[in-house]
Structure formats: structure tokens, C-alpha cells
Image (cartoon, rainbow, N blue to C red; front, side, top):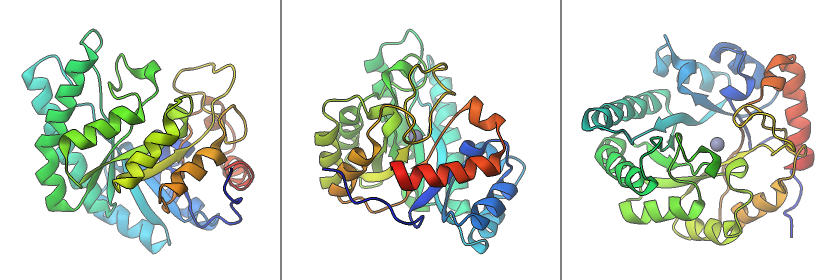
Length: 277
Ligand code: ZN
């Protein structure tokens, strides 16, 4: 059974990458003017800026800073590479804390040609190495399982079961998971695994978009909700059934949508959110 329809925008959050042509300042002003209450900031949008200052600006505009994307990419073929990744994740945690966001999203990484099980061990070691730092700064780390088409180079964690297993292995309340419908919609165990992370209090974020047929680009052809084959309301029902009451984050990488007028796109997102989420 689907949950009752969304009737307002009070839980809507946009990722800055969804409106990629806009700077953080423009995104801040436009989201606030459009009545969008939440923002997830991709780290590139902080380049050359003071994260604390950006955080103040966003909050002054009335926006809630929901999370930062992204840390991770822990696996590397050599020790030096893995140490560099750990340092980079400490910086990402610092930026997240300075911005005032409670969660850092982890795209965990993979190395082409390296066995996935080895990469998963390196991911566990990498997260464990930054856990104290995350705790000291109050930032939660959210493991985002990625669709298996990215298992070669972006993430060796490809199902919610694997993300939940990783949380159990790390056994620390500072670590949780992200449910992104684009990555997980196909999984026959999705409902069960959503309930599992909910029971453990580990469901930290919920990302929405849609899967277009045909998908013309493996990375940059995501659809608006309602435009593809994902039953987003059903998955939202499972997520809410697991106790999740946080923001619903629209995360769309789309060469087509980045090419259109972004203000019009923003209106389209609001419509799709109310009708198909
Ligand atoms: Zn996502």
C-alpha cells in the first residue's frame, strides 16, 4: 500500500548538483524563494568559500542544511592511496561540521580490477579510521549503496544488505545508511532491508529521482519522479514504515535538465514531488 500523497513542500530537499548550473549563492536564493526548505550541499559548491559562512547564509535564508555529499572513495591499490583517502575524509567531515550539516554521505569507492571483497575490507578500515573524528565533530556517516553498474570504480557496496552488513561490522551509532531509489529500486530484498536499517535507527537519508527507459547515460540521465519505472511512493512508504521522518532529497544528474532553464526545472521538480513521490 502506498502512503498518503505529499500535500506540501515541507520535507522537500534539493541537492545542489540537481541544479548544477547554479552557484551555492544562487541555489540558496532560488530555493528559498521557491519555498524549498532543505538543501544538501555537494562539496564542489564550497570551493573557494568558508563553509561556516555558507552555512550561516543558508540558515539565514531559512534553509535547513540536510547533508553534505560526499566523502568515501576509501579503496586504493596502495597504502599511500588509502591514507590519502582517510585524510580527505577527515577534511570532508570538518567541512560538514563547519557548514552545520548533521550527515556526510559516503560513496564508498572501488578500484577497477581489485576484488570487491578486498575493496569492502578497505572501506571498513577507512570508515573505522575516521570514526573518532566524526564523533568528535558530531557528524554522522551515511553509507550510500550504489547500483551494481558502478561496482567497477565507484562503490563495492551495491545493495542495502551490504550497507547494513557494513554498519553491523562497524557497530557504531555514528554510521548509518542512505536509501537512494535510483540505486536500489530493483532489489527484491529492498523492503526487508529498509525495515532492517530502520529497526537499528540507521536510516539517515532518502534520495529520490527516477530510472528512464532507455537510460542514455549511466551517470547523467536520471529522470524526474514519475518519468521512469521506479515506484517512488511505494519505496517512500517502506522508508516511512521504518520510522524515517526526515527530508526527501531530490538528487538528479541530468545533462538534459542542466541544459534547460533552471527556474522552470525547479517548478517541474515541485510538481513531480507532489504528484509522484
Ligand atoms: Zn543518492
